[in-house]
Length: 418
Image (tube, rainbow, N blue to C red; front, side, top):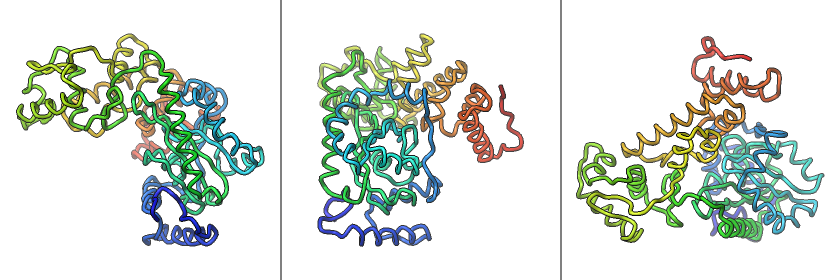
């Protein structure tokens, strides 16, 4: 296949291909190597590695008022009219659904004819459900998020058997100012969606949404984004890993750092300021000499950064705003000692503040995020903050029990109760 993101070659028989992929899927579950698209088999492996049940359904994480409040403040709410304008015809034709999810795969909006939506309800393809690969297996919005690329998923390419009569195409949507992944736009329907036009349409819709967001940036957006991403995004420029680390260290030390200090923060035992000078020279060529100074190395003008915003908000006691601004750990793949220490410090300060606040909405935001999904103490606090007997209380209790067993604490863990 010439385009790995397309599900079928033009002229392929959908029914025949569906059967072939279905057989390959069953062989995969039995341990054999399947003859399917590499991006699909890689997704199947990720789904299986997350202990996804092939007969399971996506969990529902947000309901009622919690869902309404979350959708209202989400950045993609601002471009929902664009999604409806460009894809609304499909959503109203009685054969398709339009869906929008956040960066964690939580469905925010699912729109289309009532009969089609009712059919999708059987597989929990509903607002508030979690459709990332770890919770729903291979699917277009979840796989688009995992790969950060537009993709089609055809029928039996889905990991969950309950989804295999559907075909979908999805594209990720980013914040153009920071490069941060905001979520994905998806169309779901029958096997006729396995056509190049559907993938081009969702990709064009995502680009239109990004263009709108770029032209209507809210005031005060940070110039540098480093949270939840392996490479920094600086005023429209993506930096490499080492340059991202250097920017991070310079931002947190506005008075400047010597080459020896930067070498210690970057390389630990390999104290080589010559290497630092070479990297700083390359960084200066990328950013321009007017931004960087030397002797000591420092940034000449004030730059706002997302991780600095979080620390400032915490210092001011504005925990809810700090949590809203926190989009993930600082440069998570970096092993530079100076960056690792700062990352751990920010995470610990924010976690402690959320735990001390004890507010159910803050605790829910934490445990529903990837970095808090397996945080037993926070799940315990969340369970304790909820009304006993409520649906969310039962869900939290089940998660606490699951994590306690996973950590070998099933018989000894003491959970706070209301």
